[in-house]
Image (cartoon, rainbow, N blue to C red):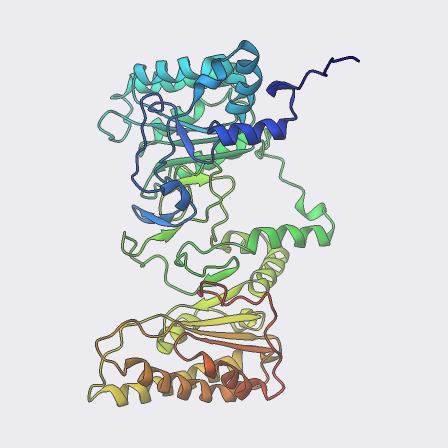
Length: 491
């Protein structure tokens, strides 16, 4: 009898997906950003398992974001790649193409560290984030950081020649001088064509620099025509395609001025954004799509940044000013497919805001949301009852405005009351619920709505009753996929 056996497959002979699973198990492919500058001497940087919470929001400066989480993985076991030349070539290509890398560019030592680490497999790198900064993290100035700008030019030439498969690139630096911004962007002329690109130049908006950053990002991703005198033939497209483009541009966006808790795409808040103070206690919220590398937030609101993949809501005014036909289509889509929300409980403020919008636009709105934020309730004071009576009068004026300026047969109205925060007064929630019930009963004069939904954090047993008061006893049950904005945990 023959005792021969067929030889088993080696690791390099396995299918690519199997090799990736093995590299993930070994820790050579991971979802966290890998810092090339400090990886060689890195130990675990966090006592807790911070990598398990990378999808949670945290505040960094004026932004609430998932990006920039501290990694607590152990050091990369790169010794596996040194077992043999075949391992180095085959598994090394997977290692460099499926991981996301970053490095800090400050001086020649940083460049040498990057070059020595990457040069043997530069053509395989697909994801790269660079933080270019001075040694003291000041703004880069035209005459003060010549060596740093030379290093940046050297990197750009190297990327053009060697990093031919680079597709996802992000750059962060501190720049507020126009000449420096132009020099940094011009050095990227020979860059390979990217799939995604993001730049961050300042935490404050520099209006003169923004167009330079945007045009360069669009050029690098192949979305900017070489001949800018030839416009995109939008009006030559079929009408159906035009409307699909407008729906993509004007709908399903995330409002950065809303908190991350319960935030849904397509919900736009009515608020005075220009006068709103933004700080660490009330930050903006990152969309989460502005960078595949998840190194920092590159959303464009209130900072000098641009990302080709940012999904944050921005003003539609620029679309309204193209021409009359474009205005009519854009206005109809914008007000029809989005949900508009008031995030404070003051009806007088709501009326003041509505006065600036024409009735013809109100007639197009299909979804309106009133959010009552969670508040600290205190014992009733002598002025408490008159205040409630005054609020009820203001609400009646607002409801009359809705009856006269909205088309009720197409309007869906949602009320979300986030209830009462912890209070030293034990009856705070009870008195609050009594007032909210009285307010909801008054909404009976809006009968004829297409839909009326209510969420009451402290009084959920009354929700169906409130809906029946407006919609009648035969009110339809909520769809299984119905989501209340501003409410977490799938309520």
